Amino acid sequence: MTGDQETAARMDWRDFDEDPLPPLLRTAVQTFVTHGYHGTSTRTLASAANMSVPGLYHHFPSKQAIIVAIMDHAMADLWRRSEAALAEAGADLEQQLQLHIECLVLFHAHRKELAFLAATELRSLEPVARARHIAARDRQERMLVEILRAGASHGVFVAPDPRQSARAMITMCTGVSQWFDAAGPLSAVEIAADYAGYAERIVGREHRP
Amino acid sequence: MTGDQETAARMDWRDFDEDPLPPLLRTAVQTFVTHGYHGTSTRTLASAANMSVPGLYHHFPSKQAIIVAIMDHAMADLWRRSEAALAEAGADLEQQLQLHIECLVLFHAHRKELAFLAATELRSLEPVARARHIAARDRQERMLVEILRAGASHGVFVAPDPRQSARAMITMCTGVSQWFDAAGPLSAVEIAADYAGYAERIVGREHRP
DNA sequence: TTGAGGCTACCGAACGCTCGCTCGGTTCGA
DNA sequence: TCGAACCGAGCGAGCGTTCGGTAGCCTCAA
Image (cartoon, rainbow over all chains, first blue to last red; front, side):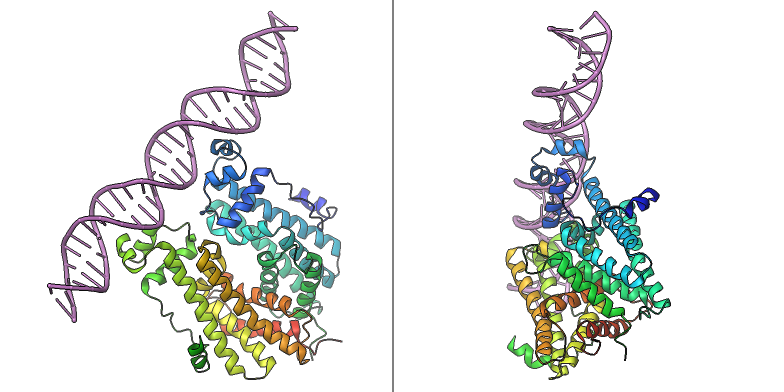
């Protein structure tokens, strides 16, 4: 995690060329999104990856380990990008909020299947992995809460309850993964800009009478 | 649906005393929320309702019929309340937006399990029920879009893309069902007021320089 | 140059178990 | 005497997982 933070500032958090996921996990993501974890059998998983069932068990010890690998990857990728966005913003709190929202929207648009699973399959994780996922989600939320809290205490934002407004913003951005369509009229970048605007207006100063 | 509209104006859409759901469905909601549709067996469903499996099949023809009944009930209840809220607001567009958001938040707070399933188990529905659910969801979304569109064309709101801002508001409100806690620091009514404020600022006029 | 040994990447078949669902009842208030 | 409301036992199918292999490749002493 300490090594991550050093490289975080250098990585391009806006780059979504291709997900560096092993082919087996890539097809598993698609299948889990369509049928859900419990609605997907190991046979389905195997044939989606052009593989036999024992072939699948050569790479992962269980079906559960596959979903865990996917969820861990999703949370780690989002966190890395969020840290890079924060580093790019520097000390300007308004800029921190803008880039954080942009980062959230881009991730939930370009990695929509991954983000969808992260939001949907929490209950399919066994206790240890579930606890880890919740911790990652809380850490992610805390990052935005801290930005809003700092902004409020410096008079940059109007956020009487940063936890509350952070949650509103996060669920707003998370929702993008449910309806985003790469072939749709709006690009991820355009949506990100719109949502950054919404966020700014939710906690912005200038519009108070 | 025509009869519904007549009684809609008269019903109290803010009343959430108790869900008039048969006991079997009530326990099924809890179980589905915890384990998901495919993660729940008919044996689990039956014992949660203090019943044998054949007893369960006396009331419903299949496991699928149970989830369908729950989903239909959820969408119908929200729609009835939304229509009543719209009727109460009258012709005032700003009031229509306020009450619509209030209605969405109250529903997703007080009926959080129901709302959570409606958002989560779409993929578990077989084609016919799924199509019906999607149609209900679209109709629900269109109601808010129409309010925003009318408001924009009358100069009450600033909403260059009503579809877009409606989706942002809806996912924001839908998210309430994921974290709301009746024992938490904020009541449903307080959250509803906050969110109505967020919505107003997202499309409000007065804060433009 | 060869071939034995070990490694990775798989596969066909099948294990024990649980699944959704049903059959043939029983109980009980009307 | 009838129908509504159940239940014990069990059906065939599908589940996650495992066993006992095999094919192909790399390494390295003889």
